[in-house]
Length: 245
Image: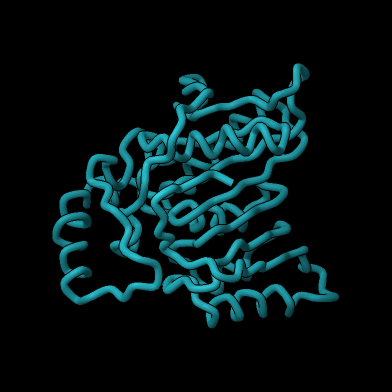
């Protein structure tokens, strides 16, 4: 959570169909549509609002249906998201520029009041919780393949988890803070879903990221990758009718 846009958004229509599973560290689980046990699963890494905002659960339900596999959302905030849902603001128009006062207000009204939660679930801590959750999944569920998709704060978690041997594939959407050294350490095939205009993951950073992966070509540490830019799409999006695609 690094900017005022991280605490703005919409509540998606519909209701989740999955469940919170206490035996799996309070994670949200939505099964694949088949009657047979799923041999693979996807982990969804959320933004700063975490599980209390139903959007992530609706996205997980949609992924489970379309990918025909189990989907899990780990509670890497340990029941205390960085930002409470009732403080969510309405997004500004796409492509807007943040004023100095907007940035100051973000610190005064979002960062400082939520500082204990931010510290207790800082990336270095949250990624350890993810590792613990994945180890539990592998022990209890015996999945053959595990992938992950993360957005915003969850994008940062995806990048950090991608540096380990815990995942088989990764999708990153509008990532939060990370370094090129983090990107260089990613060990698994990774797809990057990019908005054409994104102040926090601009074209210059996209090019640097792609160059990191391209430089591995014909080397032992090469992994498949894709950076796809969606033309006409901006972050933050501004729409009266948000939809899950």
